[in-house]
Length: 287
Image 1 (cartoon, helix red, strand yellow):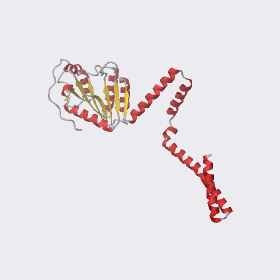
Image 2 (spheres, one colour):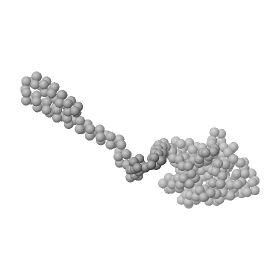
Image 3 (cartoon, one colour):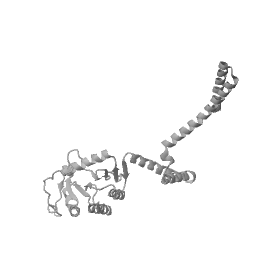
């Protein structure tokens, strides 16, 4: 009612005012009707403008992908016909999706299995993401047996294929104890022969303030940090970093570790456990 009463009241007041001023009944009625019609037409135009603005600001939701529409349809189906446990689990799944997308907006993505990490690495080794170099560390005290596992062999196979396309690969093996280095001699020698720039470093020799992280960096544009469970109930975690500021920070960590590491030489040590030389290598060209 308000939509019609307000224009009618304004029109009546204006008609009366014109009639009192001109004493022309016909002109005052015509002006009053025209004002009334104008006011009635203004609101629909305002509504159209508001709707248009609403759609523009939410175009991503209105023009959603088929996958998004499918998820929404399935969620609605579970809300209407699913059991209580199905509805509860659906809400958990939707909350997880929301959290994942929120993290992705902040440049982070996390997986909780070695298989998931290698799947990400497979994508990152694509020419689209890695055209020049890969830098990585391997903290042996955290991931014993990794390189001998199916996941480690698959990851190393990705590196070997990348080398064939001209990708430069640098890897630092980080050890807690000398025995770990001796145990990994065969792995380091194998990677050295394949063309990888292999270096090694004792955790205690890491530069002050530089954490001995297990990480990988592709073309200094994308990085992954691996975290091994350190207490009961925790889970393996591989965190993908997409923000350039964080990638630069991790690149600086790798640079610092690389400059402190010793270049692997195949004749310097072996399974007999002889100690490696103490000399350090100069910083690499990228520093």
